[in-house]
Length: 145
Image 1: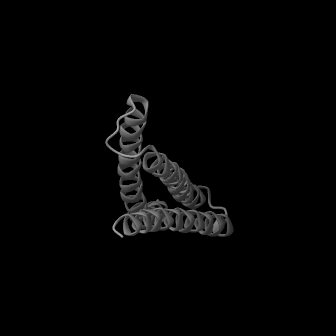
Image 2: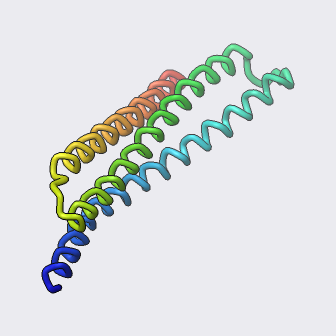
């Protein structure tokens, strides 16, 4: 009986480290969600201005900004997809590792593969986020000229 409790305790200890990773991924998803909300809000403003035919800004500028917003929205959406995928993979890693400890079969290769896929997904998410930030910075620097 003590061996089983120590095995469970060890499995829980191993499962705690990926939980910290889930916290980081959740924070990233929150940031991406905030950026996507701002993109949607700005799109609504521009579409409203175009529909009203407001003469305050040239239509070409609004259309150019809408194209930029579309690109940004796609990048953020895909970044969110890969961040959520990474979170799901980390959850599966925890479940498989815990199950492996309870059923006593080797899950090392499965856990390693899932963790690698989770990290690759996270890398893709961060790269897409970085690309979106570069788009914003580039657009703003061109507007200030």
